[in-house]
Structure formats: structure tokens, C-alpha cells
Image (tube, rainbow, N blue to C red; front, side, top):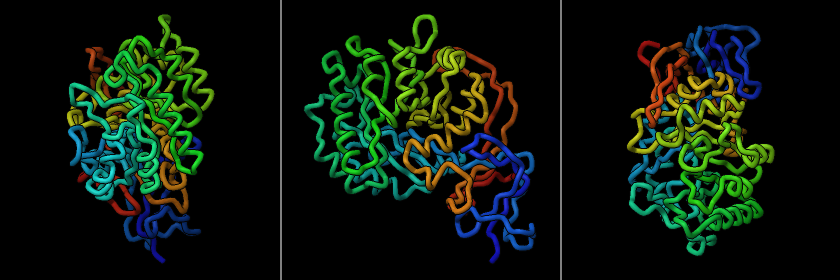
Length: 389
């Protein structure tokens, strides 16, 4: 039986080991196939020469907003994912129990990339373009509706989202929404659902401290916008990472760059690098007004920014492949190039650059790497390819 594709001579990334090796990748029937005992290109329908290019698992954008038709903030997943080497994406909790069904029917099942989602703990979801952000009074949370939604979409829903910021908490709620959301998350897990808690951390009110927030979280929970710069941050005045944050990481709490536009700065990223405190996950947090607009732009741009800030290439690639796959509970089907796994593959040209990069606050650094997408394969089908490759 012939192979559908041979990707030869590429720098193939082993996402588990975090290493490259020159090699070939065979594809048959939508999956990664074992190499033949004798390398005969005549047994391959299509040969792709990836010499001097980087063959990596299809990228995973673990946190962006994809409700294109039902909200004011969703991007078009078909434009933001496949052309950027992304074969798996997870919505960052745009919708709650009352509107998740329309999101699933009008967006999720239509997108080319495998699409998952977090569920917003607030029944009506994210209204971040409104003057008043979503109500986070825990008395208004509906555990019954949340559980019903998880029961209907158990394979798609990958966690529960709560927003901890001044816009949702005001000066009244304190930690109560986080504690209630954690309680719901733990209850769902006890019933067999995959449900870590995903926390939007930003611009905390005076009565919520970073240490208090991180102390609530446990293994598998995710902190989004971990390098955010508004009001209290994860850093002490001397630039050291706060003890409660380090202890949370030791417990297995995952740190998500969750890039966006306003949730990071080069000084913040530089402080993290100095402390050897790298994100477990890099995601784009793309919304409608930031897609392909700097300094948000795309997942590939977030990777470029992290490289300029001092993050090693191998760490960056793990943060957009195997790490988010594990965080989403889908490491058996994404984030790795391995025999028997879906043939979700990205071929990248990683080029040197001195392009200047500027954050949302006017800080500028010189870039060092550009991540240029050459080809995206989804389930063994070439879904995108540059004309010159």
C-alpha cells in the first residue's frame, strides 16, 4: 500500500524530548505511519522536501476567542489557525451555558482545525467589549446549567473559565467568584468530566491579592495572562517571582502567556527570563480587533515576541505543542509527531531577523527569530501551503 506523503530531510521536532533531528515523516490514511524498511520514493504519492526547514507537530493555540457569529470579539478560526500552522485550537471561554450551543453549531463544527473550548462560569459568557463586563456574583452562577452543558459536550469542553479582574469583580466580590468556580470545577471532575479551572488574571481590585488568587489553584489549573502588567503582578519590587506563584507551579498550576495585546510588556517578559520563569503555554488570546494587528497579531507573532525576550526555541515549541495538548487532556491525539497519531503537521521556516518589535506600552526590542508558516497538514491533508514552498 502506497504512502500518501513523505516529508523528507526536515528538522523534525520531538516535542516530548524537546529536540530536533534530521529525518523523514511518512503519512498514510490521515495518520503518521511507520517508515518502510527500504526508503523507496516510488511508494509515495507526494514527496515534500523540507530540507533546512522545521517539521513540527501541528501548533495548538490553547486560548483565543473563536465565537465569530455570536459575539463581538470572536475571530474567524479558519483564517487564524490553518494559515498559521495551527491544527488545534481552544476557545478561551467566550460563551457560557446559555449560548454555548449556538457557538458549537455555528462555529466549532465548521472550523477546519480541531476546536475545543472552555466554558465561562457566567451564564451569558464574555462581554468584554461592553462598559460593564460580565457579572461575576457567585450567587448568579448556575452549576446545574454548567453541568448540563458539560454532559452534552464532554469531549469539546476542556475546562471552566473565571475572570478575576476589576471589571468583573468590582470592589465587592473579592475571592468569592474564584472559590465558587473552583468548587464547581472540582465537582465536575468528581463526576468524571475533564474540567481544570482557567483563570483570567488581570488588574486585580485592592481586596484581591496575587498570593490569595494563586493559593486557591491546584494541579492542572491554568493562569491566563501570567505576565500581565496592571496593578499587582507576579513580581516583587526587586523583580523576583512571588513565592505564592512559585509554590503554585510546584503544585502543578500551569502558567499561560495568553498573549493578547495589553497583557504583557517586554520588561515583564524580561523579568521572567531573568528568573528562569518561562510560560508552560504560549497562546495568542486573539480577538476580533487584534487579529493580524500588532502587538497581538497571531500565535506565530507571540512566539516571535517570546524569542526576542530570551525564550529558547525548544521551550517555545513545546509551549505550543505538547504542553497545551497535555493541559487540554488531548495528548493522545495532538501535540506530537508519532506513529499512529493524526497527521497534524506544520512545516516552518525559522528565520533570523533584526525586525524591531514594540509592545503596547511603547517598549521596543530587536527581534531574533521569525516563524514563517510554509505548510499545514491537517489529518493527512495539505490544508495550506505557501506558493514558493
